[in-house]
Image (cartoon, rainbow, N blue to C red; front, side):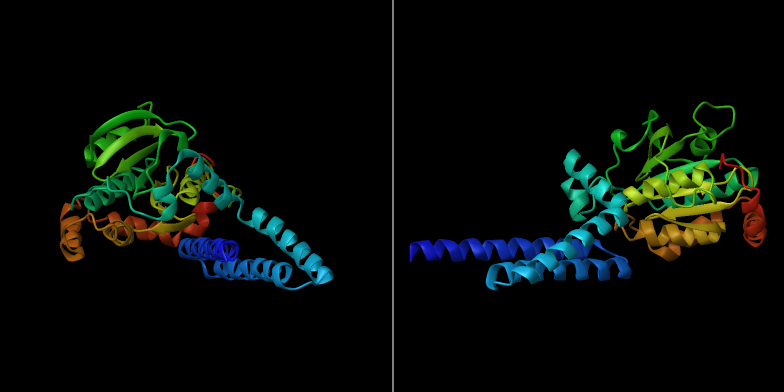
Length: 302
């Protein structure tokens, strides 16, 4: 009886751990097609385990094992970016990021969105290239970048951001890391994405690269050639966008972190009152209409 009790307890723990791991995977998958692939793969693995444990079907078992192996290799190729990020998080011990728990250190004031939108609008008007990475809880660390840049640790402000991207400063070519209402570092070199190499320039590939690895960070991009505004989130790039569209996206992404105490309506009024040039949206709309033409002549530096 003791032996069979031990076996049953071990079997129960095995099933519980497997179900828990499956639920964790399903909770982290957002895209519908990826969810279908994961369901099919887990169904094959479960079928192979059931046949090997409860049925003596050697030929069927071999066939299913071969299919599972082929699917594993295929998924490893399709999800190489996600698997790389998983190993990086496990290697650095950031289980809170892996499990999807928001970081407690993320704090933002009601003026954070206003300052980011105002900065992006002014840089767009002056056609100054810029990369602004906003950490929403991914706990970005120096080892996550190709070069961690120069430590700033200063209060977020529009004037400071504009000065950091001035063309005669040594930090203007890199990215600025923003966490909450503070500027953490500047001159950061981001990893590049492999998607859209022939279509996008270096700045946009860098924005895609960092948001592919960390799903709780976003990146604002200002093109140096055209002044076009873009926003990268979860490995996807929305461009071109106007200042009002950027504000709307930031409200949805940053406002959902439960760290901003004011309502969206008050933030919208505050952001609109901070605009100094009423032609900002008009210029951005012109860029949006001419985006197809400008992308053809887009310099690789962007």
